[in-house]
Amino acid sequence: MMAGKNAMEIFLLLDKSNCRECGEKTCLAFAGAVFRGTRRIRECPRLGAATIERLGVNQDNQPRRENELDEYVAKMQEELVQLDFHATARRIGVKMSGDTLQVPLLGKLFGVRKDGSFTTDLHLIPWVVVPLLEYILNCKGMPLSGEWISFREIPGGREKYALFKKRGEDVLLELADRYTDFFDDIIHMFEGRAVEKQFEADVSVVLAPLPLVPVMICYWKPDEGMASSLNIFFDRSVGPNIGVDAAFSLGTGFAHMLSKLAAHHGF
Image (cartoon, rainbow, N blue to C red; front, side, top):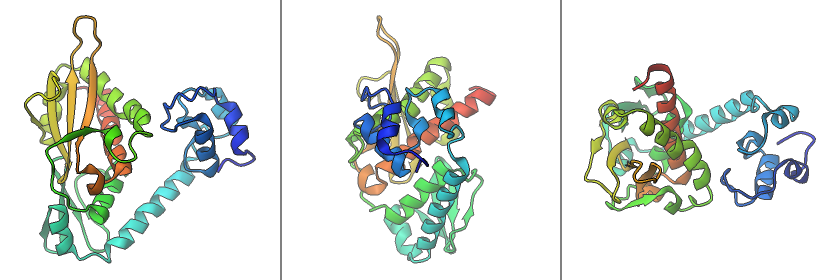
């Protein structure tokens, strides 16, 4: 919660355009979420850096957010202790190695022990750990439908789509436009596969962030005055198998990781 501010005072700082780029339906709804502490003021894409700094939150209250995230992860790790791991493995489509769940994540094995500890070569970053734990705890084990849907079609996704597009699809689009070998590289790095072109796209690539959560990236090249475009699709079972918030984290986290990789090493 922003100290010394109420929702209306926060609202008066916004441009009141109701642009929905933050994922909320109105600027007033966004202001209320900021006041309650569930959103960050800097998530408004139209708010200037000077205003954010004047509010004293230009560092995003990072220590507090990290503490809250640590507490959330710790809570989920405690819930792991209550699970029957063998039944869980069958439910979420993974194998056991001794007493450890072996969860394939983007082509790498992520081991989860009964005490909530991990064994993996992957960096333990939030966009990996949180969706992984959400998947283990809450996945309903619904079989894949073979029907692809956009993020906005996931239950609860419509209100969050503008932010998902900005942080996920637009980031990947910029990389695809810039690097000619982008899709070949992500196929090799993450054990993806090119598939028959979907939705009349020029390129369609399927990745498997989690066993029952495939993701398809479709890219349309610029053509006859039309700009290029890119969309991320999920199997229709994504709602019961992981939910909209974890799907958001997977899509935007993956895009952010590739953007950082490109900035440091290129493709």
